[in-house]
Length: 122
Image (tube, helix red, strand yellow):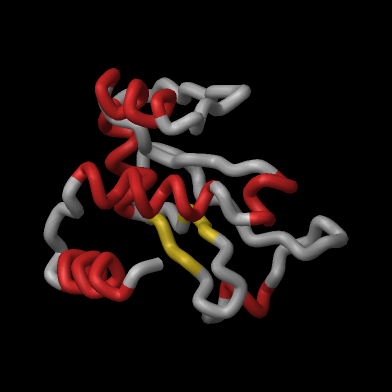
């Protein structure tokens, strides 16, 4: 990535500001062109948001071969975001529901399928 693009993106992200559409697409195109994405595929979560963004991806040759659309009530989505926790050691994401949660907790499991108490104690 060019130094100027990296500096621009770093400043925007650290300041919690939006990244210009053009720069975001350039960065996305570069990343999806990397060998691991070409060999294993890629997943975009929450992008594109608009038809124009989808068209911009298509023009760059970045067309997914599958699309998954998940539909849920807004209250459930807010609840899932509010109760989301990320394990800093494994980067796994869990839904740690509390008494007011609208959806049940997702419990961290071991490879054997039993409750992973090391994670729940963190």
